Image 1 (tube, rainbow, N blue to C red):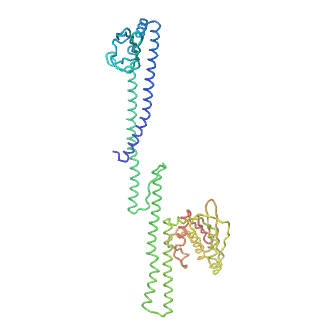
Image 2: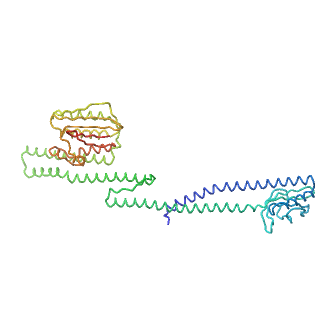
Image 3: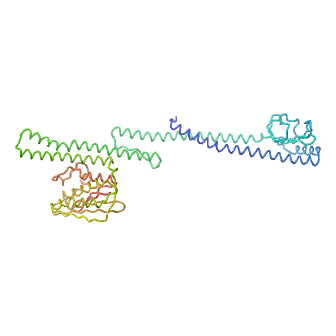
Length: 445
C-alpha cells in the first residue's frame, strides 16, 4: 500500500498526465468535428448545386430521372436523396416518406430519420424549387461512429495505462524513498546511541537525495568535531587544570599552616600567581580552539597582508633570539594578501616561531618564508633544533601532547594544536617535516 506522501505524488503525476491527454485530445476532437461537419455540409451543398442545375436546365422530370439513376448507382444508405412535389409526396429518391423532423425552411439541418428500419442521425440540405418542389440531399453521420468509438477507447486506454504506470511508479518511488529514509533513521539511531562516526550512505547517482545525504554528512562531521572538542575540553579541564590548581591549593594551605616569614610568603605568592597565570593561559587557549572548531571566527575574515604579519612577528621575537644567540632570517617579499582572521593568523605564526625558539640551541638558526604558489599561501618556519621523532609527528597536534624533546621546556601542549586549527579554519593544513637536522613546519592557507 502506498504511503500518503507517495500516494499524493503518484496521484499528482497521474492527474497531470490525464490533464495533458485531455488538453491534447480536446483540440483534436474539436478539429475533427469542425472539419468533418464542415466538409460534409460542403459536399452536400455541392451535390445540391449540381441537382439544382439539372432542374433549371431540363425540368423536374429530368431531375427525377437523374436522382433515380444516382440512387441505383450508390451504396445503400450512403446518401439520402429525396425529390417531392409541393404536397411533400416523393417523386424520386431513396426515402419513402417526408422526414417529419425536417423544418419547413430551406437550409442545412441535422435530424433523425428512419433509414434501414431504425432511426439514424442525418445531415441534410433542403432546397425549395419554384412550383413548391422540394429537394433533400443528406448523408448518414453514424458511419463515423466506429472511428469515434476507437478514438474514445484509445483515450480511455491511454488513461488506464497512465494510471497503472503512475501507480507502479508511486510504489517504486515509495520503496526507494523508504529505503533511503530507513538509512537516515538508522544513522540517526546510531548517532543517538553514541556512534558519532556513523554516516549516511551515498550513491554515485548524484541525485537530490545524494546531495542531501552529503550535506547531512558534512553537518554530522561538524557536530562530531564539536562534540569531540567539548569532550577534549572537559578532559583537559579534568586532567591538565588539576595539577596547577592542586599546586595552588598546596601552596596556600602550606602558607596557612606554617605562616612563614614575609619574604618566603611573597615567594610563595609569586608561585601561586604563576599557577593562576598557567590556568588562565590554558583556559584562553581552549576557548580559542572552541571558537575555531565552531567556525565562529569566520565572521571576522578580512583581507590580510600575510607578509606584514610575519614581519611583525619576526620583529617581536628578535630581542628573544638575540638574548639566546639565535639567528632569525626572514626574506621579506612582495605583499601577499589572503582572506582570514588577522588575530588568529598572528597567533598561529607567533606559535610557530615560539615553538622553534624553545628547542633551538644557542647559536642555532631559524629561517622564515612566506610563499604564494598555485592559489595557496605557505608560511614556513624551519629550524636546526632537535626536531620531532617520526613516531610523534602525528601526535604533536593533539591537545596537551608533549613530545620527548619537550620534557625540559615550559608549555601546555596547545601551541601546534592551535596552529593546525587556524590552518584548517582557513582551508589549509599544518605540515611537519624534517629539516635535517631540525623541524620544518609549514602552515598552508
